[in-house]
Length: 306
Image (cartoon, rainbow, N blue to C red; front, side, top):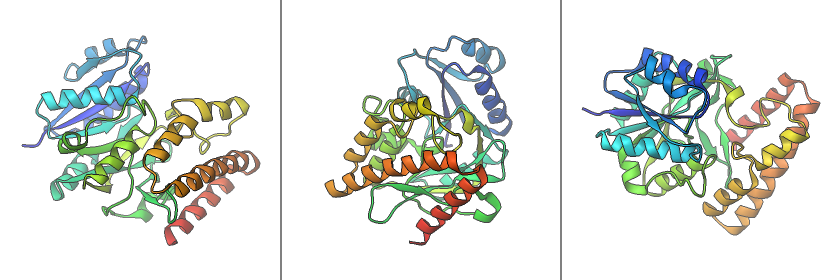
């Protein structure tokens, strides 16, 4: 029997984690283990987890552990427990009733695949902000498929994609046996998932998204981004410097250089990424929210037609 370990890294987000665990255990099939990796929380997270969910395998770390190091600890523990799959799972997720069973069915149909769930907004559960990413033609960047489209319009899709993420993604343990763990030194937080997925693709693993598997996510608690909020000068500085930002200059440059297809494409992608960021931040201030999202949806659909 295949056993899946649900690995949830957390740090000082007790109430967010408890909400996540409540939904997880309401939907969890029997052949799953839940591993919470706490990076030295000081808000009573450990005590609350032990009291309310004694069945959780609680791994105690320290504040030096960011996302990649915490997940690596969980993967190592899952291997010790004899788990055959690892589901990386963010603590600001809320599972829907069919999430784990749909991921399990997709894995049973293709045991060599890495499978990502469709991610919808917690406050707009019918709208998907993630259903896979594809590589843009002539570039090293990836764009989102059907971003901010109604889940009903996306339908039942389980085809291959060029990129997933680590928010709610099912990995066969064979992936870690083949390509190793997340690179916690080069990518302690952002791009750790993208980097491992790129290495897994190069090793022959297929990436798929299963839109029947749906997880809700509280986007207000996920990193620093220019999409869901207007950023002032301080927010823009954090966007370029924070480890929680996918636009952090050091992490993004390192990732693009490591996985470049050519030096020309690296330069082109890097330049266009930061020009796009400037346009995003500016438009987010100048345009009403609905107009901003409509333009974004139209641009994504244009990329899908290319």
